Length: 376
Ligand SMILES: [Mg+2]
View 1: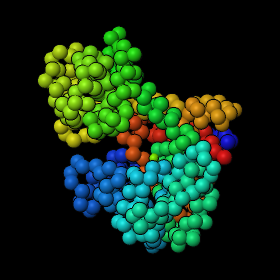
View 2: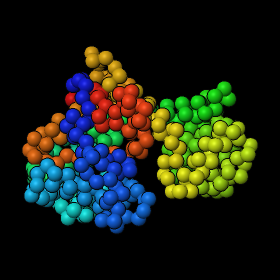
View 3: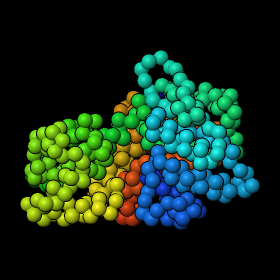
View 4: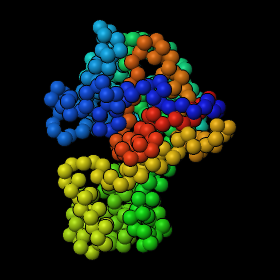
């Protein structure tokens, strides 16, 4: 591994990307609100990455972006770089289907076994499953063999989270560490002197387990809120765990309603926060715990480009969210061949883009924040 120095995703991607709200960072591209009618999307709904509606929005943005850069050059194929077989694989197949494009996807996750790639095609579109990020160098030839050469007719999608930044199996634990630190800090600041770190840690560690995903919907905002309520003492962890296991508490909405019924017992500031989150959930906001997500932004950028330029690659991978050198290098080679690069991040916008006050203090969106590029 080598440290390739400080650089930002935007240095090669520009602002050609969307975070979870699907509002393109590039001001020349339309906002999601302007695209709703054209792609048949209901008011307020923000489709998730694996949904067909998500692909309809992104394909539209890809074509508009290509028309800005290279008028009269149609996109005729797609290459996708990601890290999750199910979620990225579904998003990739949907993009190919909606665009009516042939495509190939690279799904990377570093593993200790010897380097190997396996090709599967669950939806009829090939997924190149690689256990080394360095296999991206071979992937280019694979695309050509599959009839998907990368040139000015090709859209190249780069997944951001745990692919372009914080490569899965190599550096992704730092992204998770930032999120957990954000939950802890948010709950700690809200509870002040009443914060009991042990009670919080026990709740987070247990309720974050897959066993509780049906209850938490594997939604980190919901989990943070549940940990806050348990840490506040309003609800004992043991009681909650027993109720979930016995099937008496089956969904987050049920818990939220139960807290609502007891909210009078909460201190005034927690009651106000509960009321806000309750209203946002009723309105269909999937990221209702705004304070947590703003803190997650701070904890994330605090882990980017923070170590000295001379830091060893192992230290950078242990403590920073690094740019994946192999992804960056391959993306730049494809860009030089005329391909359209476009980034997708599933991170909520509140956790990715600074507030106006932070922006004035020099903070930037995650894709514009410099960090060390590390790779083989
Ligand atoms: Mg990802």
